[in-house]
Length: 122
Image (cartoon, rainbow, N blue to C red; front, side, top):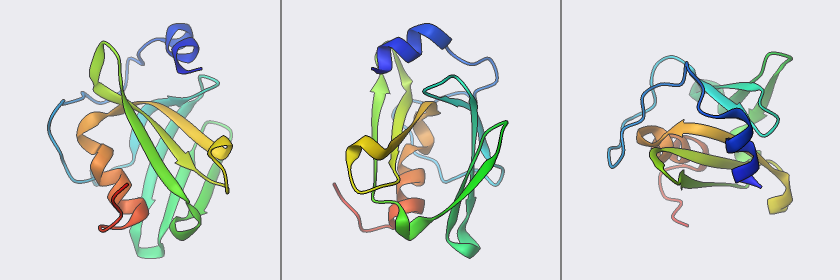
């Protein structure tokens, strides 16, 4: 399913530079330049003071309470290991994953930690 999306849309021009094997804390600005499975641009804004993740697209911004997110999965993009595909589970099953493509790999751990809390190890 992911290969189709990656082949169809390619790497976005405005995605931040990915750094493989490096972890950084979340930037102070929203993470942008990535896209969803339909090729729409996605911006992630972490509102830690209100415990919300804002998923922004051109059409709308969805404000999701962090405690309602059931899980976060990610895998490196083959041939572009400095970027990941990330699934944010918004419902009870894996079918409710919201997929985000071209997440710079240095932010993957910080995103998981911001959403799930520091002590979630899966």
